[in-house]
Length: 332
Image (cartoon, rainbow, N blue to C red; front, side):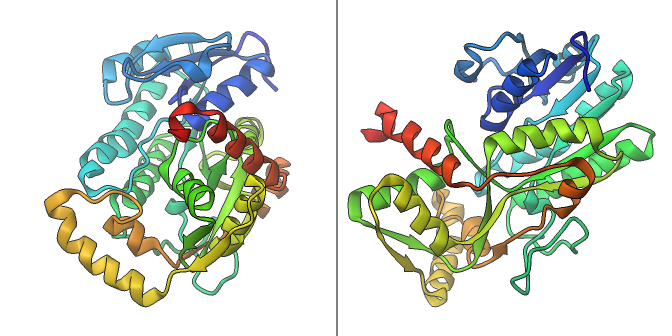
């Protein structure tokens, strides 16, 4: 366990996962230094007693400055996008940024780094059974986000080969208040405005953001160097996910499954239009290529080795929905 004098640097601390992790670390007695980009809002950190330092994982000098005196690092910063035009940015942050964070941690004598990857760097289920950290990766070429998260783990492996103490966590689809991602918002709007939801086949593993934060802390305290740990909770079909989300809204909806032939047609159209106009989710080539896949995972390794015990996701859905409905911008 950490002493109160232990200084933890959190990159991406103003984000959905990073801010919840910073809150937990403060609660557990860490001194927390939050690396914040000048362009991001510190709203999520507003009531937290943390050291805020301006910097960016694409700026080596700012990373080095933020590392001074640090004992442990949680490298949470990353770009999540399914837009083709963001491929360069994702490479700069998810791959090169990870490489530079590892190098700066080595130079600063940081004792351990916890790197936040994603389940998309693990793969998807081919047979409907949950997969674990040893599954062969089968998501190459779907989109830059998938490729860069996998490549980011390769940078971590190189750091471990140099003798660094790094542990990787692979969060599934994270839910909770403060989620600013568009896909969940779009689904909620469909239910509220039309009383129905259109979803693909396949499925997703959903998890509470509080469990993801705790999973990071468990990785620091109990994870094995060089190992990766899936952090998830419930494996749900997209139909089941939408049905439970509608129940959280208190508005049962008709959930319609998109026909695979329609998805294939949209995939072809997006392939033509995306280079011209830059399609947005859910109609980007990457999102359409991933539709129908089963992103189902086993967390047995984290449970067995680190005592990870995720809760059901219903409360996270309720909190996410409540925050959306209280947001004036969302309602407009």
